[in-house]
Image (cartoon, rainbow, N blue to C red; front, top):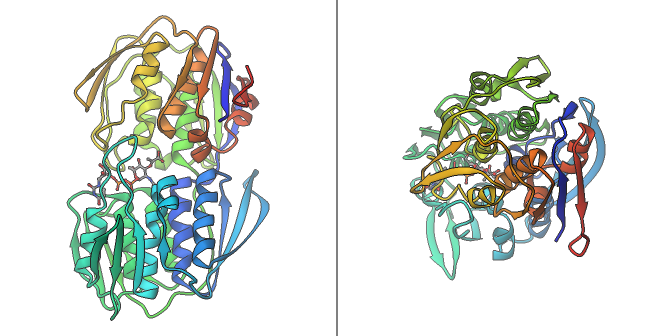
Length: 431
Ligand code: EPZ
């Protein structure tokens, strides 16, 4: 297992190119299953989660080709997916265990083949994460659902039919899955209280370009008129707003200045508002965001995570680390997942002053200094929070279990080294 060694104390300056969004790319890959035609995705990030999803599709019968490309100045991948015929309708535990987002095959396979077997994902490091909304919605669309030996067996021999669905939670995953399923259902599906994350807009726009009829994109009410078939498309993955937000914090925490190339400021309005309220200068350009914290004296601010356009849970850990360098106290409240403070004990080992109250809130107090240590995290965003702490800590920090970071941050050490960080990747037995 690789680890990262960081020597803290360098201000970061320069440009970082933001990659395509992991959480947009994953459902887009699965949407390719809705047609026999060729689906080409550009601006794809190079990440282990993408490799895992591709492996799952290959197991189902998809032929995948890839080539390198440069999109908006950023080296990335272009993938072509073609699924003439499904050779399997089963997603085994091994895929789901590695990556929960494997459940995005549920909607497309049920819509196209009227049958799917999917190993049910269990809880994970950040919470219980049930799938009840996905499953009950498919039932309302005429599917029969059975849970057997850890698998969901979903079938709709006559095909899915449109339904009026009201989600009790604006779930990102359920919105994507049902959106994909509804494109080929008979009649009209309405999703009320749909999630509004930009990744959903990216998916809905691609589905429309494939021949689907989705309206209400970007609003909490999506209306999908079912069509008989979808066709191929060439579609671009949007830039990763969470990667951009994470590197914005890297600039702020080191009191440096980084231009986040290709980042879309309109998808980061709440985090930008918090950065500005803390005292960071943020300039929104048409194709970049400039984050400048040189000479800034930061003030703590309260944050509460929420559904988009609220503050993203996927930036909570990173902002918590930033608050350690601000004056005064900040209250961080996590409302989306019930177990997303796993970074706190590790930050405490580096000298942080954080008091967690129950599962949902934490008081963070600014400290004079953090100290390098051996740390590890149990999820992707928490791992980035530890990298941020390492960037400002006195001495050397070793972040273990880098595989979490490799799931969602493309070339993390190259990108950080490019703006002046002292960070290297070590193999398990290296010191
Ligand atoms: C997506 O997860 C993202 N994953 C997560 O990214 C992100 O944290 C999350 O949305 C919230 O923004 C991908 O896009 C692959 P949800 P998802 O369904 O879809 C509950 C990262 O670091 N819920 O919106 O699983 C659920 O337990 C990650 O990149 C139900 O109760 O999130 C949670 O409390 C991790 N029943 C809340 O809703 C359901 O059927 C929101 O979950 C579905 C969800």
